Amino acid sequence: MTTSLDQEIEGFLGSFQSPIKEIAGQLADAVRRLRPDLVPHVRLGWGSVNFRHPKAGFVCAVFPMSDHVSLVFEHGRLLGNESGLLQGDGKQVRFIPFRPAQPIPEEALGLLLAEAIALKA
Image (cartoon, rainbow, N blue to C red; front, side, top):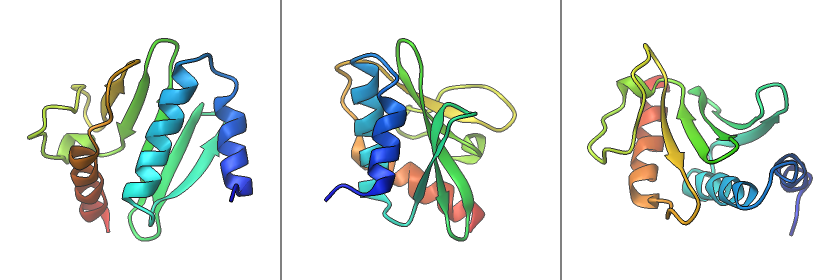
């Protein structure tokens, strides 16, 4: 069953070209499936689908770009990076870039999401 939230996310992602809109949709679906306690919000001003936790607040966001999709963790610098997926060298944020035909590493992603929530909850 499609919800109004699903329609809002699909409408936002529909403004992007294939395969970016498919990657972003698959990534947003994976985050929702792995952590049903994260609530998605389309943020047109940011150009992203943001995910908030009831106790931890803003955790991560899916940012479609022209040639890839980034999953951005607000406090990514504090996360373990045993998987080697996290990139960036800023003071706070880390991200995982996803390119066409790249599989979504759901096990590693689930661990990062759980850790990001635990840091702030």
